[in-house]
Image (cartoon, rainbow, N blue to C red; front, side):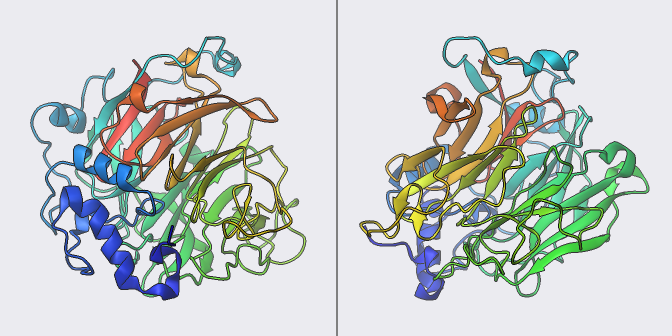
Length: 469
Protein backbone atom coordinates (compact mmCIF):
# COMPACT_ATOMS: atom_id res chain seq x y z
CA UNK A 1 0.00 0.00 0.00
CA UNK A 2 1.65 3.23 -1.07
CA UNK A 3 2.01 6.08 1.41
CA UNK A 4 -0.29 9.10 1.03
CA UNK A 5 1.41 12.25 -0.28
CA UNK A 6 -0.50 14.30 2.33
CA UNK A 7 1.80 12.85 4.99
CA UNK A 8 4.98 13.85 3.20
CA UNK A 9 5.18 17.59 3.06
CA UNK A 10 7.84 17.55 0.37
CA UNK A 11 6.03 15.00 -1.78
CA UNK A 12 4.00 17.54 -3.73
CA UNK A 13 0.99 19.56 -2.60
CA UNK A 14 -0.82 19.16 -5.90
CA UNK A 15 -1.14 15.44 -5.25
CA UNK A 16 -2.61 16.18 -1.83
CA UNK A 17 -5.25 18.44 -3.33
CA UNK A 18 -6.12 15.79 -5.90
CA UNK A 19 -6.90 13.27 -3.16
CA UNK A 20 -8.88 15.72 -1.06
CA UNK A 21 -10.98 16.75 -4.02
CA UNK A 22 -11.48 13.15 -5.13
CA UNK A 23 -12.90 12.28 -1.74
CA UNK A 24 -15.35 15.09 -1.21
CA UNK A 25 -16.11 16.05 -4.79
CA UNK A 26 -17.71 12.64 -5.22
CA UNK A 27 -20.61 14.09 -3.26
CA UNK A 28 -20.15 17.80 -3.17
CA UNK A 29 -18.24 19.14 -6.18
CA UNK A 30 -16.93 18.26 -9.61
CA UNK A 31 -13.82 16.09 -9.65
CA UNK A 32 -11.07 18.27 -11.10
CA UNK A 33 -7.85 16.50 -10.21
CA UNK A 34 -5.00 18.65 -9.09
CA UNK A 35 -6.93 21.90 -9.03
CA UNK A 36 -7.17 23.71 -5.71
CA UNK A 37 -9.60 26.18 -7.22
CA UNK A 38 -11.91 23.30 -8.06
CA UNK A 39 -12.52 22.59 -4.41
CA UNK A 40 -15.58 24.56 -3.27
CA UNK A 41 -14.67 26.48 -0.09
CA UNK A 42 -17.67 25.17 1.82
CA UNK A 43 -16.59 21.53 1.52
CA UNK A 44 -12.87 21.70 2.29
CA UNK A 45 -11.58 18.46 3.69
CA UNK A 46 -8.91 20.25 5.70
CA UNK A 47 -10.45 21.13 9.04
CA UNK A 48 -11.16 17.67 10.44
CA UNK A 49 -8.21 15.52 11.48
CA UNK A 50 -7.24 14.42 7.99
CA UNK A 51 -8.70 13.68 4.62
CA UNK A 52 -8.97 10.29 2.97
CA UNK A 53 -6.04 7.97 2.76
CA UNK A 54 -5.41 4.38 1.77
CA UNK A 55 -8.54 2.30 2.17
CA UNK A 56 -10.81 5.35 2.22
CA UNK A 57 -13.48 4.06 -0.16
CA UNK A 58 -15.94 3.52 2.67
CA UNK A 59 -15.55 7.12 3.73
CA UNK A 60 -16.13 8.30 0.17
CA UNK A 61 -19.29 6.22 -0.03
CA UNK A 62 -20.47 7.70 3.26
CA UNK A 63 -19.96 11.19 1.91
CA UNK A 64 -21.83 10.35 -1.27
CA UNK A 65 -24.80 9.09 0.69
CA UNK A 66 -24.80 11.84 3.32
CA UNK A 67 -23.99 15.14 1.71
CA UNK A 68 -26.63 17.54 0.39
CA UNK A 69 -26.08 19.57 -2.80
CA UNK A 70 -23.16 21.96 -2.26
CA UNK A 71 -23.70 25.57 -1.34
CA UNK A 72 -22.31 28.15 -3.72
CA UNK A 73 -18.80 29.34 -3.02
CA UNK A 74 -18.76 32.58 -1.09
CA UNK A 75 -22.25 32.04 0.28
CA UNK A 76 -23.35 34.27 3.12
CA UNK A 77 -23.06 33.07 6.72
CA UNK A 78 -26.02 31.14 8.09
CA UNK A 79 -29.14 33.28 8.02
CA UNK A 80 -32.81 32.32 8.01
CA UNK A 81 -33.30 28.62 8.48
CA UNK A 82 -34.54 26.38 5.69
CA UNK A 83 -37.95 24.83 5.91
CA UNK A 84 -38.91 21.68 7.75
CA UNK A 85 -36.71 19.95 10.26
CA UNK A 86 -33.74 22.23 9.49
CA UNK A 87 -35.84 25.26 10.34
CA UNK A 88 -36.91 23.78 13.63
CA UNK A 89 -33.33 23.03 14.58
CA UNK A 90 -31.88 26.36 13.48
CA UNK A 91 -34.57 28.78 14.63
CA UNK A 92 -35.24 27.14 17.96
CA UNK A 93 -36.72 23.70 18.27
CA UNK A 94 -38.57 22.51 21.37
CA UNK A 95 -36.32 21.81 24.29
CA UNK A 96 -36.59 18.05 23.78
CA UNK A 97 -35.10 18.39 20.31
CA UNK A 98 -32.88 21.45 19.96
CA UNK A 99 -31.99 22.85 23.37
CA UNK A 100 -29.33 21.35 25.62
CA UNK A 101 -30.56 19.34 28.57
CA UNK A 102 -30.80 21.13 31.94
CA UNK A 103 -28.06 20.43 34.48
CA UNK A 104 -28.64 17.22 36.43
CA UNK A 105 -30.28 17.66 39.81
CA UNK A 106 -28.13 15.06 41.51
CA UNK A 107 -24.46 15.12 40.50
CA UNK A 108 -23.72 12.09 42.68
CA UNK A 109 -26.04 10.03 40.50
CA UNK A 110 -23.84 10.74 37.49
CA UNK A 111 -20.85 9.28 39.30
CA UNK A 112 -22.45 5.85 39.45
CA UNK A 113 -21.25 3.55 36.67
CA UNK A 114 -23.87 2.10 34.36
CA UNK A 115 -25.20 -1.27 35.49
CA UNK A 116 -26.89 -2.20 32.27
CA UNK A 117 -26.25 -4.94 29.78
CA UNK A 118 -24.63 -3.62 26.62
CA UNK A 119 -25.29 -0.27 24.97
CA UNK A 120 -28.78 1.30 25.26
CA UNK A 121 -30.74 2.41 22.17
CA UNK A 122 -29.34 5.68 20.83
CA UNK A 123 -30.04 8.23 18.12
CA UNK A 124 -28.62 11.45 16.72
CA UNK A 125 -30.89 14.49 17.16
CA UNK A 126 -30.30 17.47 14.88
CA UNK A 127 -29.60 20.55 17.00
CA UNK A 128 -28.49 23.18 14.47
CA UNK A 129 -27.41 23.39 10.84
CA UNK A 130 -26.14 25.69 8.13
CA UNK A 131 -22.60 26.04 9.49
CA UNK A 132 -19.60 26.70 7.25
CA UNK A 133 -17.14 23.85 7.85
CA UNK A 134 -17.76 23.38 11.59
CA UNK A 135 -14.80 21.97 13.51
CA UNK A 136 -15.89 21.96 17.18
CA UNK A 137 -18.74 22.69 19.59
CA UNK A 138 -18.48 23.65 23.27
CA UNK A 139 -20.56 25.17 26.05
CA UNK A 140 -19.73 27.76 28.70
CA UNK A 141 -19.48 25.91 32.04
CA UNK A 142 -22.73 25.99 33.99
CA UNK A 143 -24.72 27.49 31.09
CA UNK A 144 -27.46 25.08 29.95
CA UNK A 145 -28.80 27.41 27.26
CA UNK A 146 -25.77 28.12 25.08
CA UNK A 147 -23.42 26.35 22.71
CA UNK A 148 -20.60 27.88 20.67
CA UNK A 149 -19.74 26.35 17.29
CA UNK A 150 -16.38 26.97 15.60
CA UNK A 151 -16.28 27.41 11.83
CA UNK A 152 -12.96 26.63 10.18
CA UNK A 153 -12.63 29.97 8.32
CA UNK A 154 -12.68 31.83 11.66
CA UNK A 155 -16.18 32.52 12.99
CA UNK A 156 -17.57 31.45 16.37
CA UNK A 157 -21.36 30.99 16.13
CA UNK A 158 -23.59 31.19 19.19
CA UNK A 159 -26.49 28.74 19.54
CA UNK A 160 -28.94 29.83 22.22
CA UNK A 161 -31.84 27.60 23.27
CA UNK A 162 -31.42 25.65 20.03
CA UNK A 163 -31.40 28.70 17.72
CA UNK A 164 -28.35 29.95 15.82
CA UNK A 165 -27.96 33.64 16.63
CA UNK A 166 -27.61 35.97 13.63
CA UNK A 167 -24.58 37.84 14.97
CA UNK A 168 -21.30 35.94 15.50
CA UNK A 169 -20.02 35.45 19.01
CA UNK A 170 -16.61 36.34 17.56
CA UNK A 171 -15.16 36.83 14.06
CA UNK A 172 -11.42 36.14 13.71
CA UNK A 173 -11.33 35.50 9.96
CA UNK A 174 -8.71 38.20 9.44
CA UNK A 175 -6.38 36.31 11.78
CA UNK A 176 -6.89 32.76 10.49
CA UNK A 177 -4.82 31.12 7.75
CA UNK A 178 -4.66 27.85 5.89
CA UNK A 179 -2.64 27.60 2.69
CA UNK A 180 -4.95 25.49 0.52
CA UNK A 181 -8.43 23.94 0.59
CA UNK A 182 -7.07 20.60 1.83
CA UNK A 183 -4.84 22.10 4.52
CA UNK A 184 -5.73 21.19 8.09
CA UNK A 185 -5.35 24.66 9.55
CA UNK A 186 -8.05 27.15 10.46
CA UNK A 187 -9.99 27.82 13.64
CA UNK A 188 -9.82 24.49 15.46
CA UNK A 189 -10.07 24.70 19.25
CA UNK A 190 -11.91 26.49 22.08
CA UNK A 191 -11.78 26.18 25.85
CA UNK A 192 -13.77 28.19 28.40
CA UNK A 193 -12.29 28.88 31.80
CA UNK A 194 -13.90 26.66 34.47
CA UNK A 195 -15.02 29.91 36.16
CA UNK A 196 -16.10 31.55 32.89
CA UNK A 197 -19.43 32.71 34.34
CA UNK A 198 -17.50 35.01 36.69
CA UNK A 199 -14.36 35.95 34.77
CA UNK A 200 -15.40 35.63 31.08
CA UNK A 201 -12.04 34.14 30.01
CA UNK A 202 -11.63 31.71 27.11
CA UNK A 203 -8.90 30.47 24.73
CA UNK A 204 -8.68 29.75 21.00
CA UNK A 205 -6.41 27.41 18.99
CA UNK A 206 -5.92 28.37 15.34
CA UNK A 207 -3.40 28.70 12.52
CA UNK A 208 -2.53 32.33 12.07
CA UNK A 209 -2.01 34.61 9.09
CA UNK A 210 0.24 35.16 7.26
CA UNK A 211 2.51 32.12 7.72
CA UNK A 212 0.37 29.47 9.39
CA UNK A 213 1.92 29.50 12.85
CA UNK A 214 -0.03 27.59 15.47
CA UNK A 215 -1.40 30.14 17.93
CA UNK A 216 -3.11 29.71 21.30
CA UNK A 217 -4.58 32.97 22.57
CA UNK A 218 -6.59 34.17 25.54
CA UNK A 219 -9.79 36.12 24.80
CA UNK A 220 -12.56 37.51 26.97
CA UNK A 221 -16.31 38.02 27.01
CA UNK A 222 -17.51 41.35 25.63
CA UNK A 223 -18.87 44.18 27.73
CA UNK A 224 -22.38 43.52 26.41
CA UNK A 225 -22.53 40.13 28.13
CA UNK A 226 -22.97 36.56 26.93
CA UNK A 227 -23.90 37.39 23.34
CA UNK A 228 -20.48 38.40 22.05
CA UNK A 229 -16.77 38.36 22.83
CA UNK A 230 -14.41 41.31 22.97
CA UNK A 231 -13.02 41.80 19.42
CA UNK A 232 -9.33 41.77 20.41
CA UNK A 233 -7.33 39.05 22.18
CA UNK A 234 -6.00 39.48 25.69
CA UNK A 235 -2.64 37.80 25.12
CA UNK A 236 -0.84 35.03 23.23
CA UNK A 237 0.25 31.91 25.11
CA UNK A 238 1.74 29.95 22.19
CA UNK A 239 2.95 31.08 18.76
CA UNK A 240 4.95 28.29 17.12
CA UNK A 241 6.19 27.94 13.55
CA UNK A 242 4.24 25.23 11.76
CA UNK A 243 3.00 26.08 8.26
CA UNK A 244 -0.62 24.96 8.84
CA UNK A 245 -0.45 22.38 6.10
CA UNK A 246 -1.14 19.12 7.94
CA UNK A 247 -1.02 17.68 11.47
CA UNK A 248 -2.00 20.88 13.24
CA UNK A 249 -3.69 19.23 16.22
CA UNK A 250 -6.27 21.71 17.48
CA UNK A 251 -7.74 20.65 20.82
CA UNK A 252 -7.89 22.74 24.02
CA UNK A 253 -9.37 21.61 27.35
CA UNK A 254 -8.97 22.26 31.05
CA UNK A 255 -7.96 19.37 33.28
CA UNK A 256 -9.24 18.82 36.80
CA UNK A 257 -5.94 20.33 37.97
CA UNK A 258 -7.05 23.73 36.62
CA UNK A 259 -4.42 23.85 33.87
CA UNK A 260 -5.07 24.29 30.15
CA UNK A 261 -4.02 21.37 27.92
CA UNK A 262 -3.33 21.89 24.21
CA UNK A 263 -2.62 19.49 21.33
CA UNK A 264 -0.27 20.37 18.47
CA UNK A 265 0.49 17.92 15.66
CA UNK A 266 3.93 17.20 14.25
CA UNK A 267 3.37 19.20 11.00
CA UNK A 268 3.87 16.07 8.84
CA UNK A 269 7.61 16.60 8.80
CA UNK A 270 9.96 13.70 8.25
CA UNK A 271 11.78 12.96 10.41
CA UNK A 272 9.05 13.90 12.86
CA UNK A 273 9.77 16.36 15.69
CA UNK A 274 7.37 14.39 17.94
CA UNK A 275 10.19 13.04 20.11
CA UNK A 276 12.20 16.30 20.11
CA UNK A 277 11.73 17.81 23.56
CA UNK A 278 12.86 21.23 22.35
CA UNK A 279 9.89 21.43 19.95
CA UNK A 280 6.20 21.95 20.74
CA UNK A 281 5.20 19.94 17.64
CA UNK A 282 3.78 16.46 18.16
CA UNK A 283 2.97 17.21 21.80
CA UNK A 284 0.32 17.75 24.44
CA UNK A 285 1.15 21.01 26.24
CA UNK A 286 0.09 21.91 29.78
CA UNK A 287 -0.18 25.61 30.63
CA UNK A 288 -0.86 27.63 33.76
CA UNK A 289 -3.13 30.31 32.26
CA UNK A 290 -2.48 32.66 35.18
CA UNK A 291 1.30 32.33 34.80
CA UNK A 292 1.81 31.16 31.21
CA UNK A 293 5.53 31.94 31.33
CA UNK A 294 6.06 29.56 34.24
CA UNK A 295 6.04 25.79 33.81
CA UNK A 296 3.44 24.04 35.98
CA UNK A 297 4.91 21.51 38.39
CA UNK A 298 4.85 18.07 36.80
CA UNK A 299 5.68 19.13 33.23
CA UNK A 300 8.80 17.84 31.48
CA UNK A 301 11.89 18.91 33.37
CA UNK A 302 14.10 19.08 30.28
CA UNK A 303 13.40 20.72 26.96
CA UNK A 304 10.36 22.92 26.41
CA UNK A 305 8.74 23.64 29.80
CA UNK A 306 5.19 23.52 28.39
CA UNK A 307 5.45 19.86 27.31
CA UNK A 308 3.25 17.37 29.13
CA UNK A 309 3.28 14.39 26.70
CA UNK A 310 5.25 13.72 23.52
CA UNK A 311 5.66 11.18 20.71
CA UNK A 312 2.31 12.08 19.13
CA UNK A 313 1.60 12.36 15.42
CA UNK A 314 -1.63 14.34 15.18
CA UNK A 315 -3.66 14.37 18.41
CA UNK A 316 -6.65 16.03 16.72
CA UNK A 317 -9.09 15.58 19.62
CA UNK A 318 -8.60 14.70 23.28
CA UNK A 319 -10.86 15.05 26.32
CA UNK A 320 -11.00 14.62 30.07
CA UNK A 321 -13.51 12.40 31.82
CA UNK A 322 -15.29 15.06 33.89
CA UNK A 323 -15.71 12.57 36.74
CA UNK A 324 -12.35 10.76 36.97
CA UNK A 325 -10.05 13.24 35.24
CA UNK A 326 -8.68 10.53 32.92
CA UNK A 327 -7.25 11.93 29.68
CA UNK A 328 -8.38 10.25 26.42
CA UNK A 329 -6.32 11.10 23.31
CA UNK A 330 -7.23 10.24 19.74
CA UNK A 331 -3.98 10.19 17.71
CA UNK A 332 -4.40 10.02 13.94
CA UNK A 333 -2.30 7.29 12.32
CA UNK A 334 -0.01 7.38 9.32
CA UNK A 335 -0.31 4.20 7.31
CA UNK A 336 -1.82 1.21 9.10
CA UNK A 337 -3.15 2.01 12.61
CA UNK A 338 -5.39 4.55 14.38
CA UNK A 339 -5.16 4.79 18.16
CA UNK A 340 -6.83 5.92 21.37
CA UNK A 341 -4.58 6.55 24.37
CA UNK A 342 -5.77 6.76 27.98
CA UNK A 343 -3.78 8.51 30.69
CA UNK A 344 -4.49 8.65 34.41
CA UNK A 345 -4.72 12.09 36.07
CA UNK A 346 -1.31 13.57 36.81
CA UNK A 347 0.52 10.77 34.98
CA UNK A 348 2.04 12.84 32.18
CA UNK A 349 5.56 13.05 30.75
CA UNK A 350 4.69 10.06 28.57
CA UNK A 351 6.31 9.10 25.29
CA UNK A 352 3.60 7.73 22.99
CA UNK A 353 6.08 6.38 20.49
CA UNK A 354 5.68 8.21 17.19
CA UNK A 355 7.46 7.92 14.79
CA UNK A 356 9.27 4.78 15.90
CA UNK A 357 5.85 3.25 16.60
CA UNK A 358 2.44 3.49 14.97
CA UNK A 359 0.04 2.22 17.59
CA UNK A 360 1.70 -0.81 19.15
CA UNK A 361 3.59 -1.63 15.93
CA UNK A 362 7.01 -0.76 14.60
CA UNK A 363 7.04 1.97 11.97
CA UNK A 364 7.41 1.82 9.03
CA UNK A 365 5.35 -1.37 8.66
CA UNK A 366 7.53 -4.45 8.54
CA UNK A 367 10.46 -2.77 10.24
CA UNK A 368 12.15 -4.36 13.22
CA UNK A 369 12.44 -2.21 16.32
CA UNK A 370 12.61 -2.22 20.07
CA UNK A 371 9.09 -1.16 21.18
CA UNK A 372 9.10 2.40 22.47
CA UNK A 373 6.62 4.42 24.45
CA UNK A 374 3.24 3.82 26.06
CA UNK A 375 1.02 1.52 23.96
CA UNK A 376 -2.52 2.56 23.01
CA UNK A 377 -5.60 1.54 24.95
CA UNK A 378 -7.32 0.72 21.66
CA UNK A 379 -6.09 0.61 18.08
CA UNK A 380 -7.93 0.18 14.79
CA UNK A 381 -6.43 -1.21 11.57
CA UNK A 382 -6.89 0.80 8.43
CA UNK A 383 -9.67 -1.55 7.36
CA UNK A 384 -11.79 -0.16 10.24
CA UNK A 385 -10.72 3.48 10.49
CA UNK A 386 -8.75 6.03 8.51
CA UNK A 387 -8.64 9.21 10.62
CA UNK A 388 -9.60 8.78 14.26
CA UNK A 389 -11.69 11.42 16.05
CA UNK A 390 -11.36 11.35 19.84
CA UNK A 391 -14.61 11.82 21.76
CA UNK A 392 -15.87 11.92 25.36
CA UNK A 393 -16.80 9.72 28.26
CA UNK A 394 -20.55 10.13 28.71
CA UNK A 395 -21.49 11.69 32.08
CA UNK A 396 -24.87 13.15 31.23
CA UNK A 397 -28.26 12.56 32.83
CA UNK A 398 -30.40 11.60 29.83
CA UNK A 399 -28.91 8.15 29.12
CA UNK A 400 -28.07 6.44 32.44
CA UNK A 401 -27.03 3.18 30.76
CA UNK A 402 -24.41 5.02 28.71
CA UNK A 403 -22.69 6.52 31.74
CA UNK A 404 -18.97 5.81 31.97
CA UNK A 405 -18.68 4.75 28.30
CA UNK A 406 -16.19 6.49 26.01
CA UNK A 407 -17.56 7.37 22.56
CA UNK A 408 -15.40 8.21 19.54
CA UNK A 409 -15.54 7.98 15.75
CA UNK A 410 -13.66 7.92 12.46
CA UNK A 411 -13.79 10.73 9.92
CA UNK A 412 -12.96 8.65 6.83
CA UNK A 413 -15.36 5.74 7.30
CA UNK A 414 -18.02 7.58 9.32
CA UNK A 415 -18.08 4.77 11.90
CA UNK A 416 -18.73 5.26 15.64
CA UNK A 417 -17.06 3.18 18.37
CA UNK A 418 -17.05 2.93 22.16
CA UNK A 419 -15.48 1.18 25.13
CA UNK A 420 -15.38 1.31 28.93
CA UNK A 421 -12.03 1.96 30.60
CA UNK A 422 -11.70 -0.09 33.78
CA UNK A 423 -8.55 1.69 34.96
CA UNK A 424 -6.20 -0.71 33.22
CA UNK A 425 -7.74 -1.76 29.93
CA UNK A 426 -10.50 -1.02 27.44
CA UNK A 427 -13.44 -3.34 28.07
CA UNK A 428 -16.90 -3.92 26.58
CA UNK A 429 -15.94 -2.55 23.16
CA UNK A 430 -18.95 -1.88 20.92
CA UNK A 431 -19.57 -0.24 17.57
CA UNK A 432 -22.37 2.34 17.55
CA UNK A 433 -22.63 3.13 13.83
CA UNK A 434 -25.84 1.21 13.19
CA UNK A 435 -27.47 2.54 16.35
CA UNK A 436 -26.71 6.18 15.52
CA UNK A 437 -27.27 5.98 11.74
CA UNK A 438 -24.98 8.97 11.12
CA UNK A 439 -25.83 11.29 8.24
CA UNK A 440 -22.42 12.75 7.52
CA UNK A 441 -18.77 12.42 8.47
CA UNK A 442 -17.97 13.13 12.15
CA UNK A 443 -15.14 15.64 12.52
CA UNK A 444 -15.45 16.31 16.24
CA UNK A 445 -17.43 15.78 19.41
CA UNK A 446 -18.37 18.23 22.13
CA UNK A 447 -20.08 18.41 25.54
CA UNK A 448 -22.70 20.79 26.86
CA UNK A 449 -22.82 22.08 30.43
CA UNK A 450 -24.84 19.04 31.53
CA UNK A 451 -22.46 16.47 30.08
CA UNK A 452 -24.54 15.55 27.04
CA UNK A 453 -22.45 14.70 23.98
CA UNK A 454 -22.66 16.37 20.57
CA UNK A 455 -21.34 15.38 17.15
CA UNK A 456 -20.00 17.84 14.56
CA UNK A 457 -20.53 16.83 10.91
CA UNK A 458 -17.98 18.83 8.93
CA UNK A 459 -19.15 17.87 5.45
CA UNK A 460 -22.84 18.69 6.02
CA UNK A 461 -22.47 21.66 8.37
CA UNK A 462 -24.71 20.13 11.04
CA UNK A 463 -24.51 19.63 14.82
CA UNK A 464 -26.23 16.63 16.40
CA UNK A 465 -26.76 15.52 20.00
CA UNK A 466 -26.58 11.87 21.10
CA UNK A 467 -29.96 11.09 22.66
CA UNK A 468 -31.81 8.03 23.97
CA UNK A 469 -33.12 5.97 21.05
